[in-house]
Image (tube, rainbow, N blue to C red; front, side, top):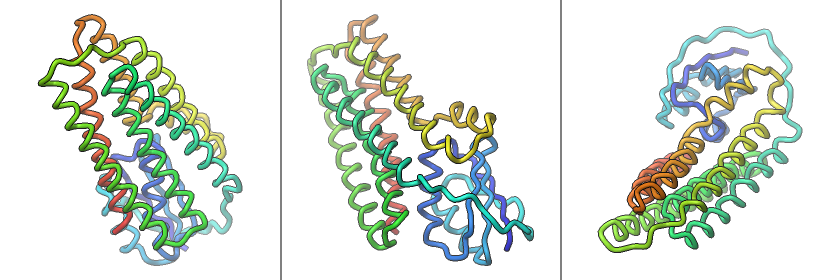
Length: 264
């Protein structure tokens, strides 16, 4: 058995990790995947098929660099007995906050919250596909990925059109307090998801700390909506909310394209 080390520059949270796991699920001969989010490295224990492994990772456009490959004497790997339970937990959290942010976003007239809800929905799609990968067939997984990707793109396009409509028209200023409070709750939820995903993989405190540092786009988005809420109150204008909404819709679109890559 060999162990190959890859540097993946854009791997900074569980979303990217799940995408990589899903893609490599199709490659035969892989015995174990050892992720290091702090150093953005991935150690793959495998029997042959190195070229196929590297091609699969590069297809995700996450900045793949093959560092080394050598023989490994390792024979046993710890198994994730609660993998499905963990995935169901983070799926539930993300979907609950999708509903919460979508509902409060529509009521408060905040496109930032609506856009953030779609980002939560995007994560839900990824975790749902991951659950299928645990026990489902590759064909089934790809079919669900394709449906999820196109549905996400459709929602992002509709949202972006609504942002443009509100930008050129006369719209009511969104409720800034709702934006801030709900986004803070979403920020906490993302932190809980990261903790749940990593608590059973490693007890290394540095690794756990790295996972919290590299909280990726989710936390950036939450912070952006909070900032937009403050600016909405300060400027008494809906423009900060529309700007963050447009940015998040673009991020959601990028996520949808990544999901569609899984369907190829």
